[in-house]
Image (cartoon, rainbow, N blue to C red; front, side, top):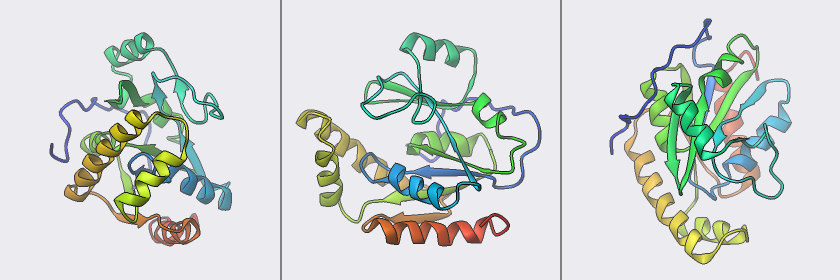
Amino acid sequence: MGCESSNSAQTELNGERSGNKVLVVVGPSGVGKDTLMQKVFDNHPNVFKKGVTHTSRKMREGEKEGYNYYYVTEEEFLKMKSENKFVEFNYYNKNYYGLSKMELESQSKSDKILYVIIDINGAKNVNKAKIPANYVAILPPNEETLNERLKGRGTETEEVIKGRLETAKTELKEIEKCGFFNHKVYNNNLDEAVQDMEGFLKKVYPDKL
């Protein structure tokens, strides 16, 4: 699969958006992208705004509606999809995920930097839709560490973990193939990864950080 996806939604957003305002964060399951970006957000609470995607999967313990995801039924998701309400959408591990046009439009006049955490296929779709953005990949130091992190969650069966690891391997290969990433962060040590990310963000958003 190339770095452009054929199922990209056609995007027409209202209003103008400053160049490269959206920050697209990509990484396989278990790499720690949510934790890393939460640290960045905590360090700069008045700079960033998290973009929330829709999903048809069930809410996990500790998650919050409207923060982690907008939780909808599969029927509701497919209805939104048929109405062309998504910038990008994907089917992953038997669930749908998608970033809505409304989510981007709600931030089109905001002074804050909108960041979205999506998978590689979602990033391809955003790139194909020609939305001005900076793309950052969060990567594991090695496959063994990623496997340990997935098992450490304790929320899924061995079969599910195995499936996620195989998916992660595929995603990592796709990330390496794609040339639109502006930066890659290897999350071996969280504090060092946060410093790496913030160093990059200061270069691309010098007026904000």
